[in-house]
Image (cartoon, rainbow, N blue to C red; front, side):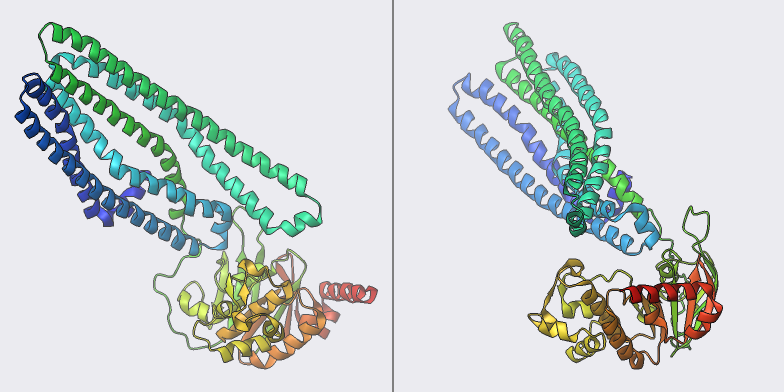
Length: 577
């Protein structure tokens, strides 16, 4: 998977990578000639006392050094551009894929894991690309070139390379093989730590209200300890690697000096050649050590690439139509035809054999016990999920064949959990219509019974909103979410428990203000309170995933025991209060 990810997202930057290879090649060749020049200075300059030769050869060494520096700087520049662009494209691809997921795929991976994959995992692969541009390319060139130059300087000492290089490669391979499982476990534990932090920060009020700080602290400490222990095990292996490489490097150098001195005494080589051979052997072992660092990064990058590939390779269960319908005749009509929906792996369907129709100007209210499937039913209309049986039609067209952009522009959806984005009141409202004027925003706020508290906020429409809307109350969040839907002025309104945080008086005023605004639209309201829906033209009672009652308020009181029981329980609760 790592090779596939690299090949796919590095292809647009082939010219930059080619430039890196060429520059690294010339820079490494320049570095390889320096020991030979140094040997010549010793053998033909210092030994013979030829100052002119020393100056002339030293000049060539200076030119080679400047060429090496220029090539290295240019290679680093193009390598950095390629790696940063690669990371940008990979993050964008992950973001687009996740944005196309339905609720089913998001639940499968989990939000904390998706965040880790889009940040930490991408960073690991991007870092591999950045280091590869400087190390992975130069290391083999340096290693092969140094072997050739060393054999050229003194073939009699070449057998030392045949001993030290395989030993070093074996040590590096063994450590890298042991590190791979630790890196895989580390990424998993990072997911766990992110999930626990996300839960605790998001639910800090609940934690404090139930005095659960010690338990939550202990839960985080256990997850943190697991991550720390795994990182320490990988770190110990990494710490073992460096001394082993240095030991082999120093041992090889000592062996070269020992056997080289014997060859000099026998007149089989010169001092300059021995010095150059020692430098070349050092370059060979350093290139192996640089490859070692790469091998330490490759296992972790491979694990991260596998996790990225899982996301990129997962297709959304909500598939865009191949030949989408881009125009419809009807306006503001929703119809369910024998709809069934079953979650993956579930034995029983959440919804089965649901049929109804809501035309423009009509309101359908859906009520039922918790877990009856009300929110799931509403989610099928904007295709947050796809029905597993039957058909959901909007304006007479199956939503699975309707152009997604056309579908979403016709719907104003207020979900059960009213979510606001960090920004301002105006920026949140303009999610419904980016081109809405201030007058339209104030109108939507007035209808949603939110104008008073927005005017009281510092800055009015420019008042800041924290992430998730945590700086406003639950009822204010709901009213701002309703105003956001009103700004869009859609043909279909979906209110999923959108009035649950409102007091009865505000609820009544809001419904009265909505009535003339939504007169030409189809409205579907999911609610728990009978007072919110009792004036609707149609009320559907959902129980166990099926409709057990359908009609107006008074009719259902007589004919539907479930509805009568819900009404009686709420009236009893109000009387008791």
